[in-house]
Image (cartoon, rainbow, N blue to C red; front, side, top):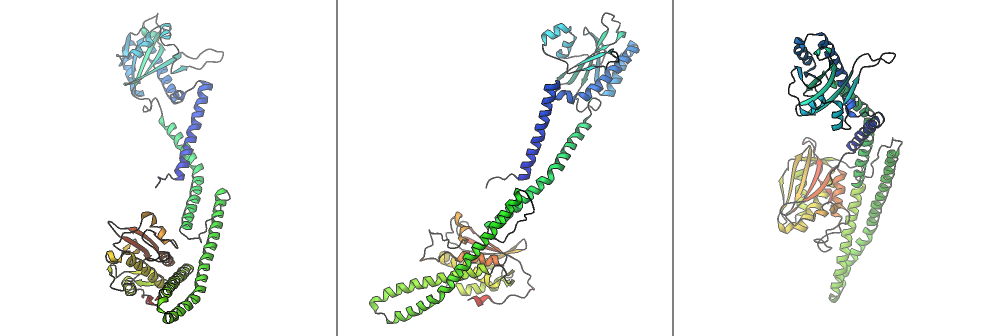
Length: 497
């Protein structure tokens, strides 16, 4: 059996893929049009917070005494959840907790021209420039921040104009910032807007697509269930055709097909029944005349007469099977359901079929009762037992057993014969089907016995199937609703005999 992937999940995957493709196109447009990549979007909140940190340190370090630099850096760093270090442009340590810097970070202490020669094409992660005043003058300094990431976390390098460093020839200091994480540092990056945006996007997408997907998959499931019922021979199925799109048109087409098939099958069964009924009287007269002929024909011609009589008897059995099949099929619409006891039913079937010393046993479940059409169930069980005795009676006893499962009674007939091929387990219930390897005209019927079984069982609202037993044997199982033992039992089905 091929693995199934539900349609609703397939559509949902396409929706998610479509949303991701739209986001990718928007990011590509931002990058090529504005030179803004995903990092610019993600680190925009960090830009704002680092700008506030650097401006705050510029003011605090510029106004405070040199002895308080370590305290100022520890205080501000604690508030932002980062470690800070202050250096002069030459790379000499001034204050702070960061004394051991990676070589990639120290590279930013080199003169700009040497640094640019070594790192051609490199640019800051982002540049934080204070907005200009009216007239073109800047309100404050330009802060250019570079970032480096390694196993210890994220390093940020920013130049600060701090005149209190006692280095008149180097008026700028270099602030080093290290944080173990950006995304999980609430002082540098706020996850809430992003989580809210993702949840909002998912909610909007689900709200827009869920009704469509639910309606589409529900219609497809209804059509699947209807098609399965049609494949099982229930042509009276009617699918809801309320939709006005192609799905609704398909439901209407399936309904028309089911109605036409129902008419064809009903006509075929009615035709078979009429033919069998019309043939019954002529065959009966032929059999009567053959009986007279057998008494008067000379002995040298007796073999010929016996051959004709055998053919007429075979034709009579065929017509009788056709009549039973037609009646069981045409009467399946309004059966009379009664309570049938398993033990009584098995006893009556044994009395009718187990002739000549045949071994038929009821092994379990005799106390159970089923709700069924008594005559149809008797005919079905009789056909099953007759087939088991015919093809496997010499291999061992035929066993009848019943058990309860999920509120239903499973009535099983099993034998010890060779079984049938696996690919024929379902086809044995088709009219006129025979397993040619082991069944011929001399040893079997015309292939209507199991078809009659299915029609009789389905007329009682049950199902029937067969399986091969291990190591040998065939088991035919009838599933019927369980009936309460207090309900009066049905009349004896011997009226069929």
